[in-house]
Image (cartoon, rainbow, N blue to C red; front, side):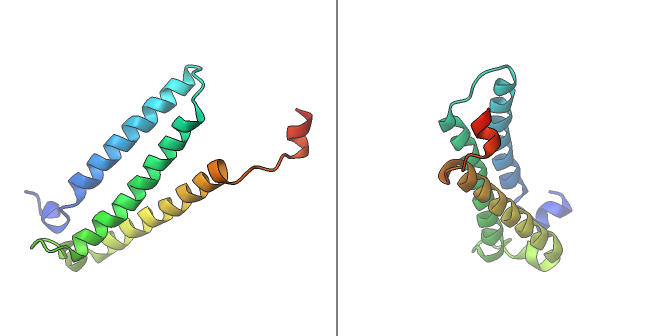
Length: 118
């Protein structure tokens, strides 16, 4: 066990979650680059799993701080700046992906003059 793993035992969870989401996301992206027209439901699914990843990241951080396991809280005590950076990163990505989801899939887009003439 490395020194850092003793401070922060959440890394395998973050890495696993990231691997799953990015594998799906980049497989979809590669398929669209071949000319495949992605159905809207697939695009919604991709954005939703990204949102779930951000919520999951925040949950993992809070479990690592407040959980009942003996190693919970070590990250906060020994590396508070890393923990704060992680929360900030996941929270800011959550805001960005939420805005993307709402703007692209919930709110109706207003047609601009350029769209009307095209």
